[in-house]
Figure 1 (spheres, helix red, strand yellow):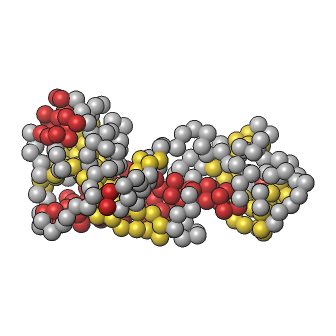
Figure 2 (tube, rainbow, N blue to C red):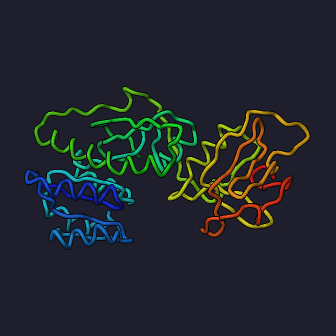
Length: 305
């Protein structure tokens, strides 16, 4: 089976490595994002794989270049351009994608972040056929990763880096053997859900929220995402860890108030609890002594102020 690949990032590289080790598949070409992933670029050179990078994948000239390879199927793994009708008419039902969301739910961008922020107990990994709708093509395979209390964006992302390429590879083998059937998303839900890419300002903490909401928010935005953010003395800080101190409503104290400060922890009043922040960063540098930066009974600013 001849395969064309559109790829970026760790999961893209992992998939290319899997496929290149199987003699039943021939990688016709690899298309990288315009901002080239150096690791994939180096691997393509090492394995003598044909590669391209296009400013506009839907340009007629670029479509014709790829069409000459006569691929049986093409794979999209973390590629960032949307294929238009002209492209899809040529590759009808022959481009598949792996999406880190439980389609038809969590269509769109940043599905891992949103799933954790929304307090989901599991996240879906879905391989589907690409059509003209955003993440609306028929499902070929779907698996789930349990989101544990200790999980955050980074830990779930690392699991997806391994599972997505393996799932895609498994689907390709079944397609080659004609042992797989697609499933319409409407059989799961006619409506589904769509989430937009998180934008600047979405990362700011709301101290008027409950402990569960704030904790999920922080877990969902840890590095390599943007990091949950608050302000103090006109400086911007990012927090990479939080935990519950106690469920307790405290009257006459404003939400966002620092209840106590130690070298490594800030205890902060929320709507219905006291939370502690750890692993706090300023300008990408870890703060080793919080007592030098924060004062007891001061107020942290977020969406609450």
